[in-house]
Length: 447
Image (cartoon, rainbow, N blue to C red; front, side, top):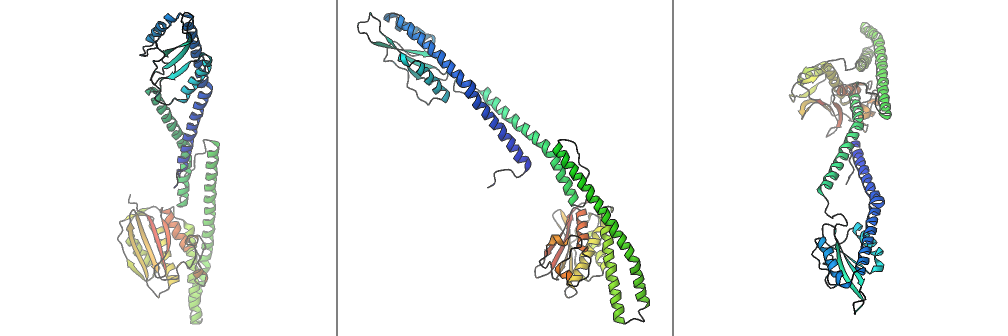
C-alpha cells in the first residue's frame, strides 16, 4: 500500500507541512527545556522559601496560637481543610501528575527535606497544593515532640484544563501553515504544469507557445532549454521537409519520362518486360508520393465539419482497393479531411500490399464514448513480432516488408502524424484469427 502521494505537488506539500510540524515540535521542546523548566524551578524555589518562612513563623509562635494561625491562613485560601489536628488530612491523590507537576513537587520536596514537610497534590483545577509541616512543640508543652499542621496554597501552577483560546490559536496556526505550504507549492508547480502542457502539445505534432523564461533561475533554465529544444525540432523538421520535397520533385520528372518511354516503346519491347517496367515506375511514383505527403505536413489545413463515412468512401474509391465496408454512422465532426483521407488511404494500401487478395479487407467506422474511429482489418502476417510503436517511425519497416514487399516505410508514419495533428492516435493491434487491425481514433469535436 502506497502512502506517499504520487504527484510532486502532493509530496512537496506533505514535506513542507511535516517540516513545519517538526519545527513547531522542536520549538516546543526548546521552550520547555530552556524557558518553562527553569521557570518551574524558580517557582518551586520561591514556594520552598515561603514554606520555610511559614515553618519558622509557626515555630516561633506559642503552641496555643499555632492552630489558630493555621486555620486563619487556610481560611484565607477558601479551602475546606481543617488543619487543627495532625490526623485530619486532605483527600488522597486521585490522578497522575503531569511531568511539570512532578518536577515542581520533586524540587520543592528537595528544598524542604530537612523540615520534614510532606507534600500532597490536591486534585483541583487551580493547581492547589497541600503541605504538611512538622513543627516542634514549644517548651511549655509537657509532652514535647512534634506537631503537624496542614497548609493549603492554591494556584501554584497553571490549571490542567487547556483554555479554548490556546486550542483555537493552535488550530489557526496549523491552518495558516497548511495554506502557506499550499500556496508556496502551487507557485512552484505552475511552471512545471506549463512545461507538461507544452510537452503534450509537442507530442501531438503541434508547436507549443514559448514558455516564460522569467522566475527562479532553475525554472528559467528549464524553460530556456525547452524553448531551445522546440526551436531545434522545428528547424530540423523544416529542413527534412524541404529535403524530401526537393528529392520528390526532382524524381517526378525522370519518372514521368520513363513512363512515357515505356508507353511509346511498348510495341517494340517484350510484353513481360514492359509490364515489369511499368510496375516499377508505378511503385517509384507511389514512393515519391509518400515522400511528398510526409513533407507536406498537416498544420496548414483547416479543420472542417466532415461526414466521416463519406470521407471513408472517398478514400476507398481513391485507392481502388476492394473493401468490405461496415459503416457505423458516427456523427459529423471537425477534422482535417485531406490529412485524414491520406492516412486512411495509406492504411488501405498497406493492407492490400501485405494481405493480398486472398481475403477481403474490412473497413469499419464508429464512435466510442467521446472518440470517433476508423479501423482497417486484414488477414496478412500482422506485426510479426515487431514493436508497433517503432513501425510508426519514418522509414521503419517490419520483417514482412523487408522480405520483398515494396514500400518506403512512410505510410504508417504519415497516418500517425495525421492522428497526432488531430489529438488522436494510430493503434496497431493483432487481429483474432491472424492479421492486423489498424485503428485511427481521435477526439470528437463538433465546434
